[in-house]
Image (tube, rainbow, N blue to C red; front, side):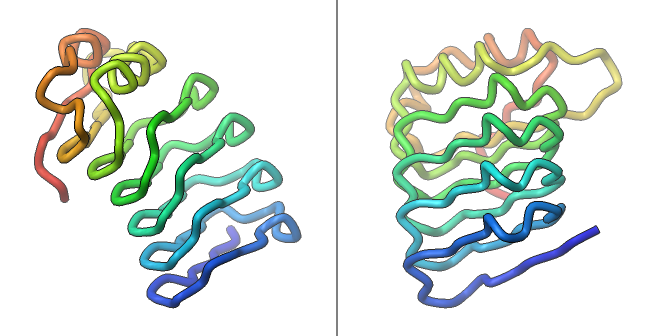
Length: 146
């Protein structure tokens, strides 16, 4: 298990490519506008909230169960390849109702008894999105921010 945390700094860039075995990566509360985690294939937890990220590509992080990317500038988020995702916090971004609905469509349907949580509060589309898409897949939608 490899852990890297660099939260609460004023970082504007960060290169994690030389740490491919990272399992826990926390870089919240910085000034990052981009983050490349494509070489970090065994991530179990990615917390990159409170930055200035305009995009986040987690398509190669197939094992990722926990993603907290709230308080950024994301207008879309593709989690279609994250088949182990059980926690997603994308609150306080710039996700429209259409982007949220597309995100909900990407989520896997889970079996009863599996706890999966999705946080979407404070996005422009939160009020108009169709949360039943995610609920019908077994996800708990929480409009509060933990």
